[in-house]
Amino acid sequence: MKQNITGKSLGLVSCLHCEQISQLPNDYHGEKVCCPRCQARLHSRIPNSLDKTTAFILTAALMYVPANIFPIMNIVYLGEAKSDTIIGGVLHLLEGGMWPMALIVFVASILVPVLKLIVMSILIISVHLKAHWRPAGRTHLFLITEFMGRWSMVDIFVLAILIALVQFGNLASVDAGLGAFSYAVVVIFTILAARSFDPRLIWDVIEEPQVGDHD
Amino acid sequence: MHEKKASIALENLRICHNCDLAQSIPTLAGRVVVRCRRCHSVIEKHQDNALERSFILAVTGLIFFIISNLYPLISIKKAGLTVDATLLSSSIELYRIDRPLLALLVLLTTIIVPLFSLMGIIYIFVIIKLKHYSNFTAPFFRFLRRNEIWGMLEVFLLALFVAGVKLADSADVILGISLYSFLALVLVLAWLSATIEPNKIWEATHPVKAEN
Ligand SMILES: [Zn+2]
Ligand SMILES: [Zn+2]
Image 1 (cartoon, helix red, strand yellow):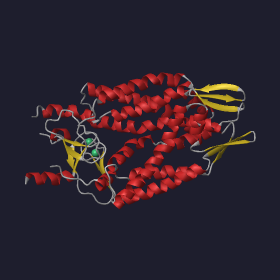
Image 2: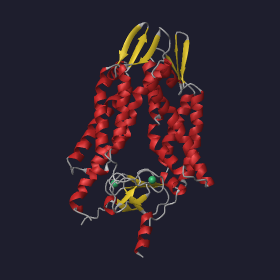
Image 3: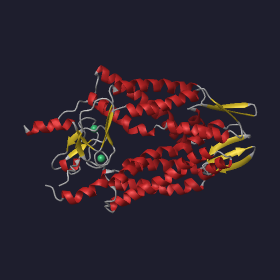
Image 4: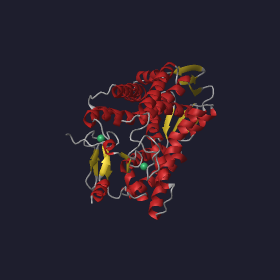
């Protein structure tokens, strides 16, 4: 027998907020149990984790289309109106010879959201399929994805700073475009998706054959 | 006899949040990070005087936060006009041009959440030192930890540089005095998040009691 004793098999749950370890009642069936230390609801696993994550990822994926088609900002410069999409912004930096900056913005605003959508989808599907494939690797993939997500907000902040700075009346001004709202939704929803995903689901299927039935 | 054994083990017992493996950890001293045996994610970190260090960093951060708000972060000059951007002005301008949701988003991520986190840590430290706990203390700290991720000052700093580069060929970009204190603030916040040990705070506000 391998000595992989999980909290679940012991009937113990570690509070996700304060790490207090508590005993779940023997006849626990999802009723309300609160952490004795921080009063958070205790759950052996995040309730409806996969459904919530899927809903957030699907919404984010849908919003990803308008976020990239519509301009994120509208610029009026010397009486001439221009607009910039997210990809357009990266290309302008590249044309200006600012390739290190273009690379950073490309990674943060294009690569990270796409990877986040792909990685979260793979994780959801792998849990649905009860995959045994490299659980530690998938857990790490999840932790990295969770950490990277926030950097995609950079485009929204650049927009906000340009709006605050470029105020020269008819000479030059910047306004938020249609894509800005969708883009913000993509970033926020992928962060929420990562937050609702419970990585312990990756490991549960690996326990199953060994645990069998417990009374 | 058996129950006593179980309660002793509980103090060094950790259940990994990422793979649910139950494991015991040694009693920690000095500066260590303990990783999960199975999935290798961090399950515990320890540093001597973590509480005091976190408090000092939070106070330092708060001072830098105030300075960063007093002076412009970045300014541009064009046709004899100078426009300054402060941390707050981007939210205000977004609101003024009638983009209230984006204004709120920027306000939350760059002002409200970071300020709340810093003041919250200072408040918790004072509560712990005065042993002035209430039923509100633990849920308050839980709320603070839960919402910290919405503070995105380091991302805003990157955005300042990107915006500066974007404007550089059509206007004169002047780096403001506050930019340096803002840079310091971001470093202090990174240091703080590496130093803070929520477990210490939880133990102080509500000592671990052996169940049963
Ligand atoms: Zn708790
Ligand atoms: Zn683990």
